[in-house]
Image (cartoon, rainbow, N blue to C red; front, side):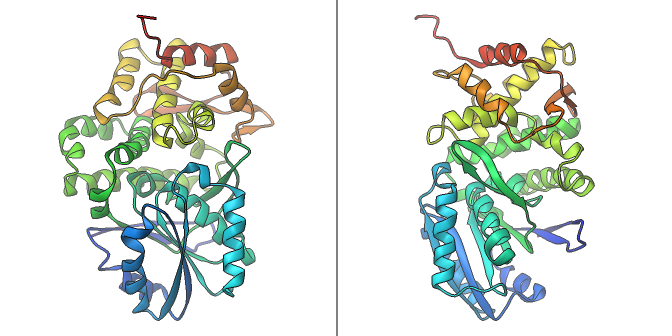
Length: 366
């Protein structure tokens, strides 16, 4: 078992526990004093039937009475309408500020459950039990919670930290292959922005990662969370270097907004990283060899490096409404080299369009 402590500005730190089972969960709840109350487990229609009863039995030993709210799996459910439906459920069942929200699932579940916890009665205790690689390495750590609005990714949200993140790595064995590799985009992102040695390790351990070797996955998750820990502790509210974690997300989110229900978050982030690397190359920040290496590294992990049937003008329009805009314009994350990222405000619409053309798949037979 591994434990990583995330320090927060309000000094209410929380642990990310990595384990190979749920056996330690009861003790973690007892240690934190999360006992003798009601809990609402928020989960989706895929994860809930597999794990919710097991979680209910475990936390029942802590004298926690739990109900389950299940939403239809997928990004299309990550909306204010679903959130208001959860509020109604909480009110109908008399949940108070002393009660508990538990997120059981992937990134969509964690983002939405965290937002509910942050806003219902001005804040409930919140525990995250991530069941996807994406949620374990990224969305469950750092306190970002959000829902989509009018097709725009994570437009409504809050910073709200959990009391605990408990990741049972063995559940990744039940994860669909596509969803497993979906999470790898965020792993690659972390290595590319901050740790060239980790990037090399990912190349060396390619087969073990694809085979879901437990020890390899534990180290992969630990290394990725450690990178994020260093960044979010330094800049918890994204006023500076935390924006580096958005590598690939500006274009990636804009693509995802046009492909909801068709493409997964990590797949769009992979495309966004390829596009950002191409812009970096065109700005003479990366060599062509470095750009091609970054692009091609996604292929063994079943992540896309090209996409067809995209509306480039719509994607650029979505980028202009990106939540990372501020009074100085759009903060775009580019690469100086593998392991070194920077924030750039000089990226033009023409450069973005050229990058979109680079990732657009064109059938030469047409």
